[in-house]
Length: 286
Image 1 (cartoon, helix red, strand yellow):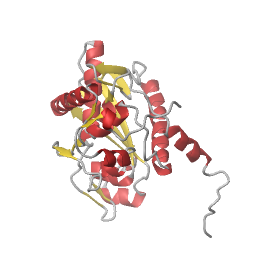
Image 2 (cartoon, rainbow, N blue to C red):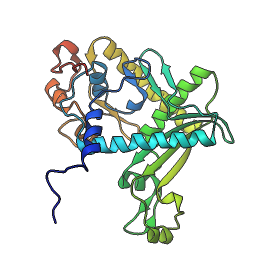
Image 3 (spheres, one colour):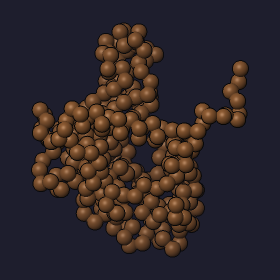
Image 4 (cartoon, one colour):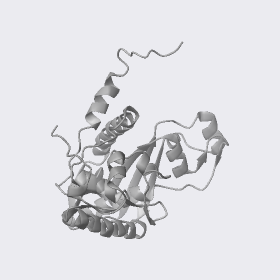
C-alpha cells in the first residue's frame, strides 16, 4: 500500500511548524549578529542583519527538525529546573556592539563549578561521529566530540554570562540527543550503556573553549564592522579544522546547500557588496 498524496491529519503539525519557521527570530538584544551564527558564513550573517527576504524558505523537513529540537529543548530545561533550582534559562547577553545571544542554561554552583549548558539535537550520522560509533560494524572508533562551532557558540555565551554577572564560567557542558536509539543488540556488542544509546554529554574545559570563542568574537566583530558600514561581507566561514575558507554556492559546501539566501547570494557575486547594489529584497513585516 502506498501513502496517500493528500494527507488528512498527519501533516498538520508539520504544516504549522513550517509556517512558524518562516518568521524570523530577533537577536537577543537587538544586535546585527548572534552567537548561534558562530563559524557560519559572513555573507549569510549580513543578509540576516539587513532583514533580507529568503529566496529559499525553510522546507518541511528542516521545519520538522527545528520544531522537534525546540520542543526537546523546552522539556530538558524544565527537567534541569527541577534538579537545579538555581539554574537560569535563555539568559540574554551581549558582547560589544554587534553580537548577542542567549544560552540554553546557566547553572551556578554545581559540583563542577559554574556551568554554561548548551544542548544539540541531531540525526544519527552526526551523533555517531560525535561519540565514535560504527553501527553497521558494531564497533567503536575514536569519537570526534562536539562540532567546533557548537563549542564556540557555547563559549560566546560563557563570555556573555561572565561579563553580565562578573564571574567565571568553569566548564562548558554540551549535551547531545539523537532521534534514533542504538539497538539493544548493538549496544550490548559495543558495550554501550542504556542512556548512552540516545545521549552524550561533553565537559569542555576553559583552555579548550576560550581561544576558540575569542577568535570567533574577533572575526564576528570584523563582520559587524563591515555590516555597520553598509556592506555585505564575502562568503567566509570557519571550517571544522579552524581554517577560514571562502564558500562557493556552486561548490561542495553544505552551508550553501541549506542557505536561505542562496539565490540572492549567487546574484550578488562573491565580492564585497554595497547594500544598495545587492539584489536582495527586504523582508515584509509579518
